[in-house]
Image (cartoon, rainbow over all chains, first blue to last red):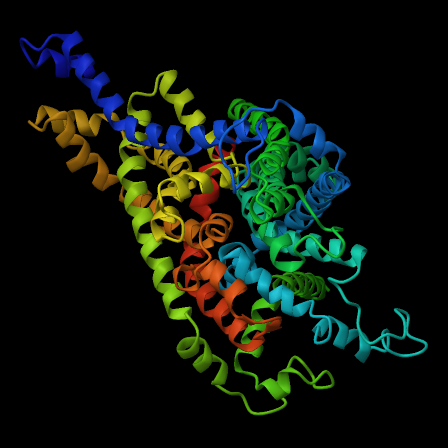
Length: 316
Length: 280
């Protein structure tokens, strides 16, 4: 086809047109690439430079001081706690999400009435702005007016001398370290579940129906069909859902910032929130940048895994 | 007998879905209740919190709209969203087209490279970008957000559009060129109209992603009248240490629902966008 175009234009040499096309391609791509270089590349380099300097918001000039910030950060017990929390919080919430999203996706594949409304309600946590959804949870976890506490009291589990959860009238969801961490994890599960479900729906509906029917005819039990067909065929898409869930949770600041600000006593502090409190609120640009860069190796590994998953599924 | 089994399975399915809907939507139901509940009813620990024990009221909405900057937050969000859409379209559409059309090796690699920059999180970039903003005197200005938000819309939308352009056969534009259109004309007059559904998707995403954004807005803006909805509601509707729960919930609800309705229509495409390789 291309040759006929060129042949139809006498005098227009083949090389000439290709050159023009090449120039046009570069011209079309340039704005996007320049934007990315200037607004992602340059700040990233600056983050690295800051982490090697002693810059503060009061004196943001760059005096390189070597790896001092990283050493200082690593010795800070709050940082270590934040590092540990970030992993616990990400892995726990994403493991729960993967299981729940699989169950939910299977249910959504079945025919039933009012699908649009069901879909809308189930997707709400992802489609509504996260900071606003989290505000709803903040009110649900209120230290006095929490509806969860009200139900527990109603059931006699809380607020009575014989109550299973103790005689106090409230749980103080965000005021007790363990419960606060659990609350933050629940809200993250709530948030990522719709996304993972939609990804899994795509994977489940792409399994050829005749394959499952053939297995049925051959007498394979539902359990066996799941184990031998559905799971292997959807493993790549499940991994993709898991990996993206990790990217979004690992770097998220909103849930922790709105619910607990890292408290009580730093027990829910994560890398992103600690970066914010150190780097912006306390004005220590250098240490803030150093803390944020600890996220990078994990993200790089996840990105490589995503690429490898995507490649592998293309072969399938 | 078969009917009973079928009924039981139906029942099981509805119970399961009901449980998930409760988990997902309850916080929003909770917002609806608080929006219309009188303070006295809202702040009585013994009242049933799920129902109206006293007649509903519009007081919270009046306070939200007339005594706070809420309308201004909505306006700021819309202005920023609109500007980000324009910048995103102007850069991502041509880039995606070129990468899809001349994709042999380097085009594909560059496309993946651009997509990967989407994975560099704002939590690493916001410290240096806050210095950029103050260096250019854009702190406390909507412009700082308008210029920064394309850092996450361009990579994602370029990748998404690449997929759309790849599905448009080359023959169509080659035919148009034989018919006398220039290379550029074939692109703008023939190919772009065919990609309109992809372009529409990008418009929706650039807008919703901007509206959802939190960290940059929190870092760059502290003047109330310049805030966006996503930071204005959680940070400003608190007097001293007292949360104005009624207006707060109303503000969260009103901003959430319209964007959620639109986003729901497009979510499948969004997901197809970043799992493109995996569902091919």
